[in-house]
Image (cartoon, rainbow, N blue to C red; front, side, top):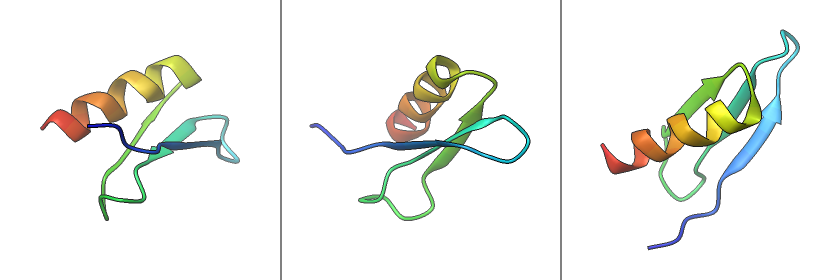
Length: 45
């Protein structure tokens, strides 16, 4: 299953990842790659 992921950098420099199709499914990371990895874990959980 493929899901659309939005990643934006916040004012503190962290990257925030969100899956619009899954309300409340959010994660973050110090780098875009870390945020992508963390959101993948959140979706699998």
